Length: 382
Ligand code: NAD
Ligand code: USQ
Image (cartoon, rainbow, N blue to C red):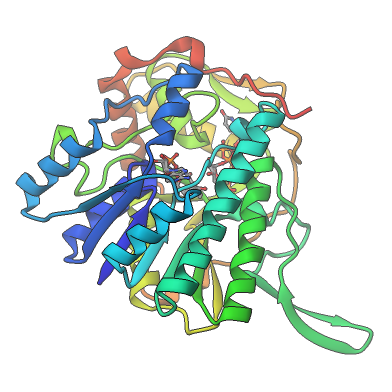
């Protein structure tokens, strides 16, 4: 299949582009490298030394014999996007190309506006591009489990059947997102749903949980193919951060009580889920929603698991409960469905001691690159 990976220089996108290329798909990467620019602006850096994209692609060709096309530009610029769609003419479009940090979106009004403009306008341009140029292509869009928030009922996959005043309907599941970033994903979902209903486009929204891990078969094949791994207080995510904190002897930063429960998955499952969605496309006019995660944990559970795995490696790991910089429930019900991807054949990698060992060892290997001043959270929701 011919697949365009938008955001292919990022954490999920790079691993996915290489995986799809390895599986024999013809892959193109579109990215404007704005994430590298935001890192520079915030004075942060990935734990792992990532190479420039052109070097990454050259080495991938040397290692695998497979060519990946590169389109450098911003999808909020319609002319560039339309030209890329015309030239590459993909059958599947995987869209990772957004500002994806909740804390980044809450730094200031400017950051909220940047996040929502970048994400909503980029996706809207893509929908118009598909309508005008590639109406039969299939959009696989990365959404987030955080669109749902933490309701006191089970979370379904995108839709819920409701009875009201004696009548019944199946409607989009209510959304209660917890940051300006998560809100941008809700706005995207509404726009994509509209494009499917009204223009007959086909789309799959992957409501992904928090991703952990760094190694995939392909990114581990050579040092120049290494993936990014964020640990700072803005772009770093819970489990990845905890492993790096443990490796450098920083107390684990549990926010508040730590009862916040979220859905998680291994990066190796992200890449496979995307391929499964591509291989089993939505029908014309269908807006399909899959909850993309394999397990649920509270933040405190994760900290205890990392502490245990660290002890086994001889690390002394302390757990801190910091005042929560976010406004979120710290004790709540959380039970989400995730059967759609499993029924398409996903065989999950569950969080195991061996994964934690490998993440911890990876973090130990690159520990001299950690800037300890970037670990504590700096962005407050209030
Ligand atoms: P990332 O920041 O590592 O990568 C995003 C990439 O998109 C970057 O390379 C960036 O330069 C590019 N990009 C952003 N805006 C662009 C634009 N306007 N035009 C072209 N390129 C643009 O993020 P990630 O962690 O790989 O996340 C990818 C997607 O998956 C995001 O949409 C995110 O919301 C979603 N997601 C991520 C996680 C996670 O835990 N990392 C969990 C759930 C969902
Ligand atoms: N948390 C801590 N300590 C930390 C970091 C986070 O306790 O050091 C807590 C947060 O308060 C929150 C939970 O862990 O309750 C998850 O936070 P996170 O930073 O790991 O993840 P989040 O902000 O939700 O965002 C990440 C990705 C985002 C994606 C989302 C999936 O950055 O792109 O959409 O995970 S989900 O959480 O399912 O919405």
